[in-house]
Picture 1: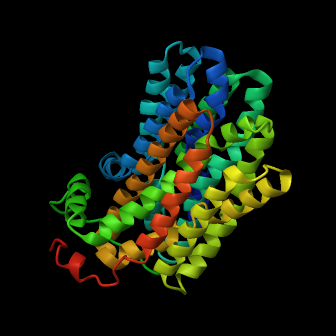
Picture 2: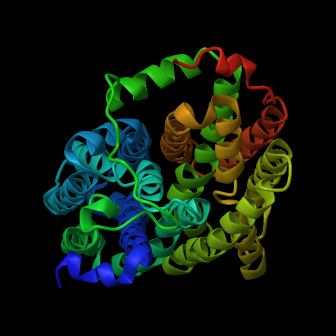
Length: 425
């Protein structure tokens, strides 16, 4: 069915677009979570240490975050749909090629560099682009759902990949991850237009036609770099960057990459351990929605204080728990609720400090800090496991960073005067 024939849905067609992009974000995030499943199988198959495998995961996570602001420039230049299709194809080819790897640098190149570049184009910046282009009202709802998918995808797909690994080996995981993006390419081409006006529609909730986007002398790449330069001169940027660094360090970097391996060390089967991540994924949807509701009503600094503080204490507790069914289930439910609950208050504080014009771009750079933290923890966890023989110190140290981030959250200024004076005319 040609996309133009679906115009009968009217403005509700925006939700079709959200549905397809939701799937793309799920697959992209699931790709980033796959190295956590491959840690032990690749160690057994090739003799590579967990530090070596973790390095590829760290590079992928880092690029996943760093590419965001530049992906926005590419979407503006060549189009969102072309960028999305190209990124899906790159992810598929990169991960599929790892089926033939024999050396550690093959792993770093496929799962680290090229997969990281592709998945980085299908992340928060894509969610923001879709929300802005397709929604005049209910934009927060759309952004919330799409943002939640990035964490939920990591947590829900991992158990299935773990089952594949246990039954058929690491090669089955590689092939499954490679097929996912490939299947989505036809859906994007058929169902995702560049803009609502491309098929004669208005944004959801818009009451009148809107003019075509104006392009001034400042290109998107210039805006991305210029916003970083301006924001880096403010204290509030570095405080937000530091807290989001810890957010990435304590979620997808450490727990997302190493929780399964930690549980295996304690004699827990891989599939059962991966089920904990799936449980986190389910409660992540609840936690993110609830956090957005709370952010509209309460001081975001106080919310961040509790989010990071409780997260830090739970990480410090986990290594000393008895790893029973009840203690692990409690940890999974609690950590799922808190997984990306930090996103809504962090985004609100960014907009308060930098305004609507450059706030979203600055948030893209803060998200890069999140992924830098995740990359650091992915490597740090593997290194500590290789050196000490267990994960206890890694999780305890990560818990301490959560407590530090809780204190920093209360230091974030309320006034926009410093940032406003730096805003471009």
